[in-house]
Length: 576
Image (cartoon, rainbow, N blue to C red; front, side, top):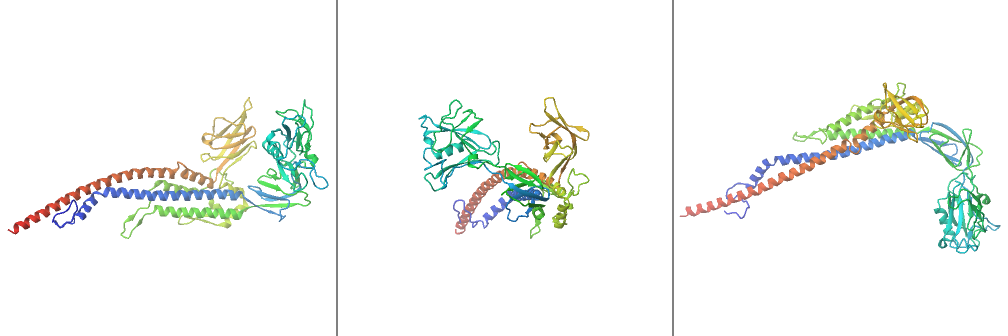
């Protein structure tokens, strides 16, 4: 039987030619199959590495939360209504803070003078778009005003014709940069209900003893006040200079309105204190007090304690995330067998980078903090109740952790931070980097003939080159001291004891592995490059196989056609 085109029937030969071609190409296509298997494994490896980076980042974030919770404080007040004062604390010393608020800080303010009926007699107009200055004395000359807040800064304002309104004056004052905020208030009664109110931007008496001033200087001449030309009752005055005024006389003041600024006055643990603001951050280290109401005759006691519950929850969250990481890594790195007993390779089975990371992470968590003195109360996570189980996961004894926080909170905090203690009050530790060395380091701060401060470090008998101290007192280490940041306020010598807690060591390790250009990023980029090359090889190999299929199909079709013709000829001969 004949065939049509290149189609194969196998009727002439009795051979399943399609199956035969598939078998031939199957043997030749083994390399493509192996390339595709490699690419598929790389895809699974990419998925596993991406998931691992997410887990490591979450674990690192939990470390930061613990550091925050160990610095957090629970504050309870003897005044359940928080009438006079509230407080927040981060890193504050535990204990009681007794506060009595005499007066709160207020802002200087100029407002309208009211008559017996409560109607404004000045600083008011019928409409906010009414003119505030007719300048009848010098027609055509724009009105000018000078304003001074409690900061002592004087600004001059020129009213253009189009903006010569109450709203225009308000906007000009607010745009002037003066330490004053202007508002227009509608009191809803009287023939001039729209009033101009001026308030100092900051509380406290500032440099003007709490006084805010507004002066009309429109017709000032030769340093002498002219006649006021406004409709607001703002009296005339003078400034010593229109360009850079430094002195101001005359005008309306907050003294007249009876609203000059006041400072906050309060006692803290029996010590009388004065501040220009009601948010006090410098009275007790780590504490921020918000003064709400003065006139207090009694005392408010604020009790500060460590947030043991918050810190314990944060530690438990850290361990939960670590245990999940361990289990996920085990699943991604342990090969299994299918039902036929064939090995199914896990994506991270032969990956040395992730294997080394997990080993280093485990040993770091189980190890001691670097640089801690022998007298340190707590040196390892085990000292805080963290135990390693047989399967590599961690377990937390919460009672041990909370007991440690109660005994020596500072020592617990050191296990999660990079710490530095100085024997010289003129040199204070600020921060350190992942490469900064640990242990005792001697230092010497000197001053040259030009007044510049220089610092040098000595360790194991080797002294570093002098490092210049910046103008703001910052000394930044180099070489072995890279990342070390100190605050220098004087000359002299001393010793720094630098320690890297376990938590900080883990943070540095994870940052190096999960950050940009870190271990995982490098692996993922390598896999992407491999898969690009593999994809090209697979396409080329498959193209060769497709071409060969076309050739074989054609040849077998020709064979079937020839066999068909031969059978037909044989039939004809047998009929003779």
